[in-house]
Each structure stands twice: as C-alpha cells, then as structure tokens.
Length: 404
Image (cartoon, rainbow, N blue to C red; front, top):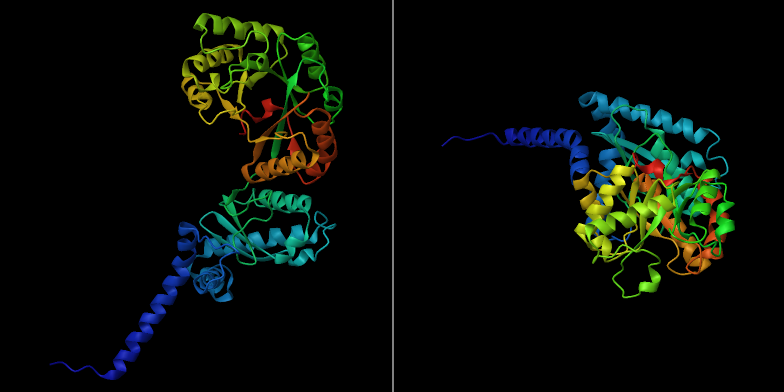
C-alpha cells in the first residue's frame, strides 16, 4: 500500500482552490450573462442575498477586474472605455438639473460578451418619472458607438427590478443611436368631432386616422397632411359585437365576397387619397379572418400603404397574413383612452413612453369624439413636451416602417 505524505494533501487543496478561483474569474461573468440571474428587490432570503453578493463580486470587484485585465484584456479595455464615457456624461450638463449627486448615479460598470452591466445608485428612486425617462434613454444611447456593445442590463443597488410602474428595466435593453420613437394615432377623424381642433394644434407629429365616407373625410385628410401630419384610413370593419351602427358606411364584413372587399377598400383609398396607410375601426371579427385580411393587405401592397393592426382582438391574424403577403404590419402597443379620464390617459401616456424607451419605439392609439376628445387632447398638450425633453421623439406612423 502506497502512503502519501499529509503535506501533499495541503498542496493539492491549495492548487484546487487556486484553480477554482481562476475558473470563477474567467467563467463568472459568462455564467451571469448566460443564466441571467433574476434577483429582484422583493427577494430577501439568504440565497437571494448571496446571489447579489456573487454577482457584484464577479462584475465589480477590484480582484475580478485585475484578473480580467490579465485573462481577458479585450473585455477589460472595453470596460475602461465604458467608464470613461460614463464619467464624461455624468460630469457634463445633461443631468445638471437632477436633484441628486449625479457623480454617484452609476455605482459600478461591468462588461461581458457584448452586454454592459450598469449598477445604478438607489438615489435614482428620488427622481420623478420624467427624470427616469431622461436617465435611461440617455444611457441606452450612450454606448452605441462603442464596438462590441449590444445591450445594457440595468441594476439598482445590485438588484434587477422595475425603475417605476412605467419603466421596466429588468430585461436587457438594446443600445441604439437614435432617440426612442412614439407614434400616436388618433382615431375617428372625419366628423369634426370633439377634440379635433385641439389635436391638430399640437406641435408634435401625430397620425390622423380618418373614417372614410364622412362629410369631412377628404377635407380633414388634406388639412392634416398640410400641417405635416401622417394620414391613414380608419377602415370600418366588422366587430365581434353585433353593433352595425358602430361600423359606419361601407364596412368590411366577413360575409362579403373578395371582389366586394377589394372594391370597398379601393373606394376608401379614393375617398382619402392623402392616406399613407390604414388601421381598423372596430374590426375584431374581420381582423381574425384570414380571407378578409389577405384581400385587404394585397390591396395595401399594391397601393404602397402601411398596415397598422389596432389589435382589438387577441385572435388577430393581421401580422401573420401580412408576412405571407409581403406587407409590413405595425401593431398598437397602448390604447390611451379606454376611459375618458385625465388620470387614466396620463398613466397610459407614461406607459407608452416607457415602452418606447425599452423597445426603441411604441405605438399608442387615442380618439377624438366621445371616447377621448378634449380630455385626450388636453393630456397630450400637457405631456408631449416633458416626454420630448426626456429624449423621446414623436413621429408619424410612416417613420416606424423601418424601425419597429
């Protein structure tokens, strides 16, 4: 029997520990990026606290960075570049009006395999929602010109979590050079309905969705276009509810022949020749019908129109059929005025802005007339400017064709 000196066991254990630590340095951030630890502030157990400590150690500790400079010099250099860019931002004037110590806004920066980890100070919770928009939108665009950076995982005090009810930063956000874009479509133009004049006085670009075959449809389309707004056809389509009076003249019904569907679509285009696209007025039943949508989207393709699905039913097939036909379909993200209530519409606008920042763009739909009217117009008048100052751009729907 071979006897091994006990001293060798000590050396073996030391070598094992050193190997484990080196492996931890090399693989730690890779494991974090691949597994995406889902720590949120509500997790207070011991295991959750340990995960936070491990994450922070792997991303931010001086030992980890020292190891990275030797083992993974490219990532180390990228991190140094990130730090320099962030310092320049924080020392500049962009955040000068924030009522916090902006030099402490970013606690730490980590980087691995295209992903930036930004650990924000808990002081960010002291800011209001528009300041949250400004900070996150600025940081998302900050590293766009740095090679190798794909997205940003935000942490707050070492945790993943929502910054507010309106801005979810738990998932990585792709970096981009351009401002986040919001396209607001206002439905039900064509009747000189309540709120029409106020909406058309907005300085930001919106999209006017005009119901065809109304007394003022053609005239309102021309007027809106001359103001610089996008115009689309708010095409009356059969709903899941049996309420024919909601649909208006010459609606698209699922019982119509292909020839009649095509004819009504062509007539609507002729009635509003300024239109760059169309969306559905009601239409829950029609937008779930493949036969109907195929005819409409074929006409849209032939006439060079954008298709926007208002998503009035979860059964919609518009995007699927659009892909088959070869028409790009945009989809509504937020309905602004389910309730004709100032507070409700304001919250919906904040949700829309948050989505635009996290997604890069978002589409909201509101209304003139009894469903929104003057209340929707007032919310837009009061909120578009502060959202715009946060770095978000308001665009016509046609601007999202290549961005959404």
